[in-house]
Amino acid sequence: MSADRTTLLILGASGDLTSRLLLPGIATLLRAQPRRSLEIVGADLRDLGDDEWRARVATAMDAAGERGATAQHVVDTTRYVAGDATDPASLRALLESVECDRLVLYFALPPAVSRMVCEALAEVGAPEGTILAIEKPFGSSLEDARELNALVQRIVPEDQIFRIDHFLGLYTVLNLLGMRFANRILAPLWDRDSIEKVEILYDESVALEGRAGYYDKAGALRDMIQSHLLQVLALVAIEPPASIDARDLRDAIGQVLRAARVDDPVKDARRARYTAGAIGEREVPDYAGEEGVDPARRTETLAEVTVHVDNQRWAGVPFVLRSGKALGPIRKQAIVHFREPSFVPRGFGGRNSADRLVLDFRPDSFAIHLTTNGKGDPFTLEQSVLRGELGGGQLEPYGEVLASILDGDPRLAVRADAAEECWRIVEPVLEAWAAKDAPLAEYRAGSSGPRGWRTNG
Ligand SMILES: NC(=O)C1=CN([C@@H]2O[C@H](COP(=O)(O)OP(=O)(O)OC[C@H]3O[C@@H](n4cnc5c(N)ncnc54)[C@H](OP(=O)(O)O)[C@@H]3O)[C@@H](O)[C@H]2O)C=CC1
Ligand SMILES: O=C1O[C@H](COP(=O)(O)O)[C@@H](O)[C@H](O)[C@H]1O
Image 1 (cartoon, protein in one colour):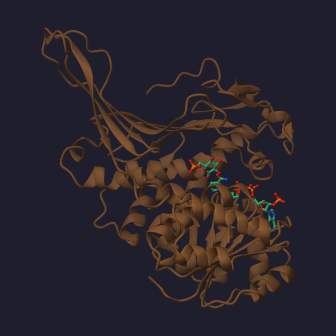
Image 2 (image 1 turned 60 degrees about the vertical axis):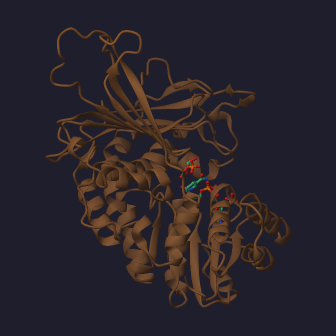
Image 3 (image 1 turned 30 degrees about the vertical axis):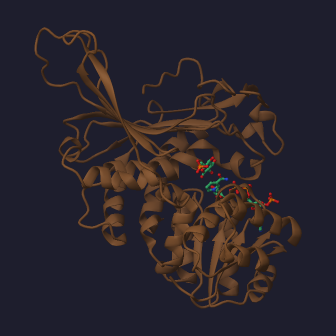
């Protein structure tokens, strides 16, 4: 751990990400590792003011538990700067106002704005040693991601670029590595011979939450599937790496993403948008009528895409990726569906569903649904559920991600090639959906999705 004075300069500090996930994640890091030395500066277009900003930082620190000396130092020293970071003169002034040994410039901004800030930064120049931490989605298309990669690599060397995907900091997602590669039970079953299908689902109850500025131009496919769910797919599907150091892990991720594709963007993808409804007591307004939403964009709030991985291990196995907002049932899981056994001794009755491994992302746990003899009648099969609590880490995902940035360990960050591959995989679907008559189904907020969309699990 470095004792150098590090400043985290958050661009987009008044946005949803900063308050809801980034600051609370940092708070868990400072609670678990109080010897870190950190100062935080918030910057955004909106003039939030020092007091309001400090209150937000203090709330996040308090929510993580008792405020220790490091967290207190962060609250005492933090400040807020209003301004447009895409404007080179404002950006220069902002950078000059920061005194530290090491600067982490955190882009908590919509992708198009991040790109404009990078263009300004290329003009202004980044202080020596600056780390760029850039949120997903990285760029807005394959071409844009390529250009953005070239641009940021002109500003700082690749080892100072962290393309952020906080799902790589989720305990259960990291646990895929232990589960797959550190026991003899699952590894021999982990291929097309034993696995019929994999589902990776992230159905949320949160709705737009005032994020139209970002979300209405992104939609569920770009917001969740292009980044998070493809990273999870990569960890489910990678070949065993020799080590879990950054190079081996990211080589393996790059390899599997290069093999991934959507067969038929029309048949293998569907999308929908929520209408007014209620989730519990909460009334949710029609997405299309929300402030800042342009209904003509036909932005989807629920997307589902089937991806195939063309290699010996996975040929023919569908990976169904789905994520949506304002849904009633919350499902944040990866489900590995195993094939039927090749033969079951005659005389057994009752077998009616296949075995499966369910990994719950939040809270962290897993369950194996295994066919066994029935409770009352031993000759009637039924499923027993073996559950495991994973215990969770000490850190929230953003704490893990920030720790790895501060330690200069890119293991939890997305490498340049992987960021581009993820766009390559989803781009045929985006093109199909850009057609005027591409279907956009509807679902009531609080429901489980459009009528007629069946899900397993
Ligand atoms: N929210 C979340 O749950 C998560 C978000 N992310 C990623 O974080 C990024 C931001 O998302 P989110 O916080 O939700 O979006 P928000 O729209 O809530 O926040 C973005 C912020 O950036 C500000 N901004 C826009 N232009 C500029 C500029 N020129 N200079 C300085 N600030 C500017 C916006 O100000 P204004 O509102 O005035 O335009 C807004 O406060 C996205 O890339 C998203 O994918 C990643 C993980 C989780
Ligand atoms: O990146 C994003 O992630 C969140 C979901 O992550 P979680 O850690 O809050 O569960 C999602 O709500 C948001 O739309 C997206 O931008």
